[in-house]
Length: 179
Ligand SMILES: NC(=O)c1ccc[n+]([C@@H]2O[C@H](COP(=O)([O-])OP(=O)(O)OC[C@H]3O[C@@H](n4cnc5c(N)ncnc54)[C@H](OP(=O)(O)O)[C@@H]3O)[C@@H](O)[C@H]2O)c1
Image 1 (cartoon, rainbow, N blue to C red):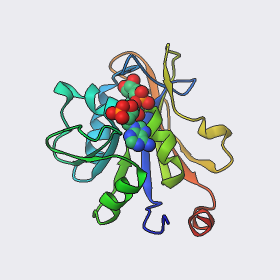
Image 2: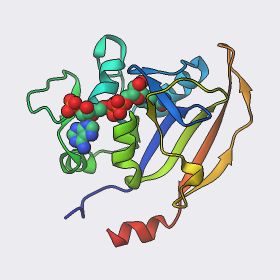
Image 3: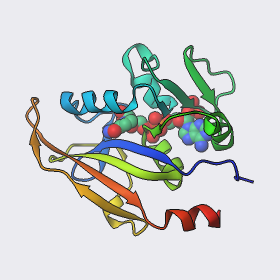
Image 4: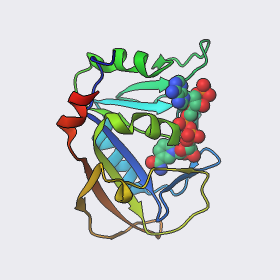
């Protein structure tokens, strides 16, 4: 049934020490260096976001210079400039023909929904603990994922340390052929 599904999606997120990612539909910390990297990586490609994350963007508008795909269960939801999809099947049909990379950009519900379709996860770890109401699954405790790169801690201009980690999906080919 899901033969046309893609398994090469790229998760991208920032998470604190406890894998917290957001509070009150906002990021826990805006790290300018990380925002710049996010823009560089995703520009010219496709991002997939949940409706709540899209509405957390400036003026609740899609991000410029990339294809924005937004997930909602609301059949009447309108979002000019974005591709609106209503379930995973519709999402996979929409992105099946897209050229370039497809980045899964949150929030929590979308990370959880699409984790099994990602082959790579780019996680900016923030060396701090914040109050959070949304989290990324702990990839260090998930045997399906292996941390491939552990970045050097860097000092951000906003006063927190952060580093860029990347995770690779184990047995990706096996997973793909099993489903
Ligand atoms: N740190 C990071 O890297 C990062 C990145 C992105 C977001 N965030 C944070 O994450 C938080 C938001 O996460 P969230 O989980 O509350 O919201 P979300 O995942 O952004 O959006 C949730 C909405 O997506 C739609 N949706 C989810 N699953 C769906 C499915 N299977 N089919 C159709 N539609 C579906 C629903 O929209 P409807 O209600 O319209 O049906 C749902 O209410 C915010 O605090 C945000 O700042 C952090």
